Image: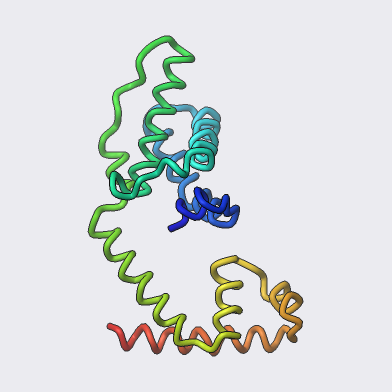
Length: 175
């Protein structure tokens, strides 16, 4: 879980993935809650900074990651409204959070899909696993992978292509 990696190891890549996923959703939520674009951007930044600082306080037994992040966003929005206007925050648009927070079914399906992908990745040769992880999970460009692993660019691309074919076949078997 990315939040756990941020909490325990201060993993910047995990935080970057969380930021990439949640920042636009939190900003959209804040816009629907009535904040101006610039203010929504600022509050979204504050929310993600809070995620970085408070990741160790996340308890998966109490809430899903999205629920926790949107609770932080809701509280930040209310705090901003009180600071700026001395008033309680605007009423909460319930449907906005429901639209953005994944359902239990979605979370279950995602977890099952992640488990299938991990299992399929485990069937790849170690050199293919490393290249796939660098390319897709670390978002490393092919040229940088080739340089890092001291391989020709064509070899990197071939290994990725072959690995993806094996992954597709392994995942189709599971269905």
